[in-house]
Image 1 (spheres, helix red, strand yellow):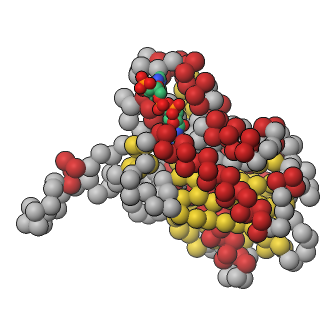
Image 2 (tube, helix red, strand yellow):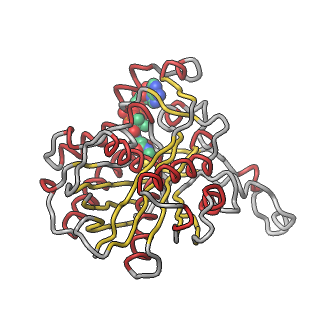
Image 3 (cartoon, helix red, strand yellow):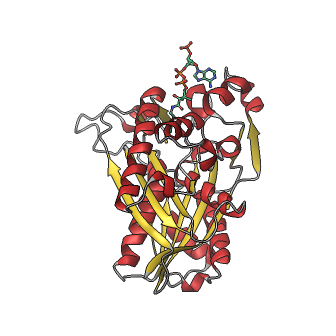
Length: 332
Ligand code: COA
């Protein structure tokens, strides 16, 4: 038996923002952004929502898998940028695609969210609770970014990716291992205060608490170099751990589809694992950092470009706010 990735899909907002456009908004340059991050442009939502992008990506993944929405038993949405506190994005996807028989809920593990959701779905299917699962990673980080902060606004983009997982009685294709880990971030290297709770309540003054709306900074903040250090180490560590659990080595992997936060992070990890950059699917040049959706979009693009054939082993790795990190190894 195996738990197999049956289909993938992705969706990006129509509006493309080139680096040159940002030059007119903050003190930056196309050259600086390309050289330090590998980003040339990103897609920014001008009406698309986390749920609408996720539903579009899910529809494509289902079509790719040859499955109907009514057949889906579990929907997990990974996001750290939902527009509303309730209903959750997975419930929105469920009603938008018409997956009336599914159980649906969200997972928030920031940029590693897709991996945590995939791991959770894998565990449910492995336990025999559900026979299949639809997993989406969807983000509209443009709404959490401070467009006056050049250190962060140049990095992020919006979009969604999705995969269909299914229990199969036969074959050796499917998930071979999955690994998740958390490390402490009390130093706050990567955070975003909640926009949902930026309100005072009648009891705040009574308890001597600071006024919540005065204290809340709704934008994403980051200690760039500290995050860079964490990201490079986590990507290598988690990839090696997931491969060890699958009893494989980096040489067995046909393609790596990692989270894309900075092309230099991918280059560093490739060098550390003694791998040519060609073995990595790099999409950051045209989508930026799409947080919990990045690696799913990368996997979808790799498959669309015919870079993986049946029997190939692929690996996804991710890291993000929390701090969260993980990796997953599977056979196509
Ligand atoms: N344009 C031009 N200059 C910029 C700039 C921009 N957009 N952003 C920062 N700078 C400046 C800084 O102010 C600094 O100037 P100074 O030397 O006069 O003080 C200089 O560039 C170097 O800044 P630094 O922060 O050292 O650059 P860096 O090489 O570390 O690159 C990041 C910054 C953010 C691109 C990089 O640290 C990074 O990618 N970090 C990880 C981000 C990440 O992974 N986030 C999400 C995790 S899921």
